[in-house]
Length: 106
Image 1 (tube, rainbow, N blue to C red):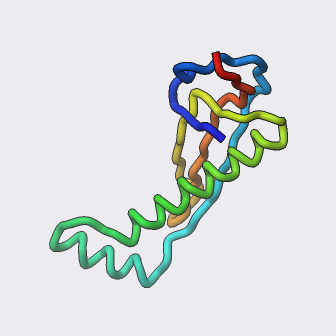
Image 2 (cartoon, one colour):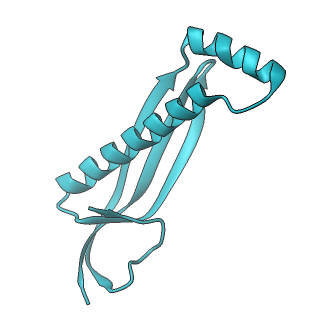
């Protein structure tokens, strides 16, 4: 399945628009990783544990969005966006959304 942030794909034409698809996940921070991040915050530098958590969250949200598109019979998702929001202290939602379409070669 093709996933792009643009509204179209060069060399392809949209033959059917299925509509909005989305996938999300809500993740909480880990206390042990928070302690390590606190120390890293004091001395500066990249907090790799949080970076890994965000990457896993993005991948899971994108996979759920693709599954939503497959259920509609789409073979691509265009105009994909990713949004993040805080649900509660220590937990955040990662949302991937876009337009599910069927595409064919031009």
